[in-house]
Amino acid sequence: MTSQPNIAPRAARHRARAVLVGDRLAIDRTRHTDVVSTAPFCFRTGEGYVVAFRYGVLVLVGLQPAGEDYVIAQFADEIVQPAPMEEERVEFVLSPEEEDGPASGGVLRLKELTVPRILVFADILAKSVALARYEKEIATVFDTIEPTAKALSTSGRIPSARKALLQLIGSALLTQHRVSGRIAFAEKPDILWEHPEFERLYARLEDEYEIVERGTLINGKVGVIGAAAQTFTDMIDTARSTRLEILIVILILAELVIAALELFRR
Image (tube, rainbow, N blue to C red):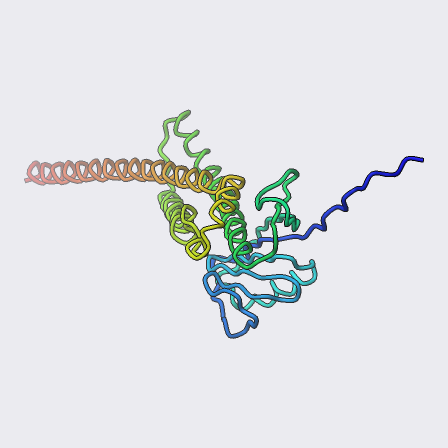
């Protein structure tokens, strides 16, 4: 009778969840205990960790669904300008024998669950979910501009809604500020200064989630939106100036006609 081959047990899978809850988080550090990091703010809760980013993202690592909802509710009073929730999930396994980094099937492998590792992949998850939100916002702005551009190309009529176009410019500039300023998608987390040994893990995750490419693409789209909206507003201003000049000419002609009529009567 042949013996059965030894089959390695499947490594237990854990989950991480990144949730964008608002435009910004005003974190009250005194409300949370067991803090393991201050930049970004990270504390331990139960068997897992919570990493809070000021640009409105919470990354929950190793928590059960009920625990995740409880933590999110705890931050309700610290959310500045709540926004429709955007989230991203990833599963990870602890595999001491293998290298840190992405694996097949979208699963992340970590040698062990240490704070530096958590901060590195939490930084990537937070940037990814924030970029996902701004990608949707940019797509909405393009959907708004497209009918105006199409009408201009087919009928040659200049759009008249100058206020709406200025709002688009403002929205595009705000998105660019959030992506390049708040998220700082091209910058590495501070933890890498203290633990450069995790540079490779960060680089692999950054490449996996295409953080730099997505951020650069958003900035490029913002530039296109700004240029298009600026073109429309310039055309509207030119048309208004032309109408104003025509009105002035008409008024001058009217004055001349009135003066001529008065002379004729005399």
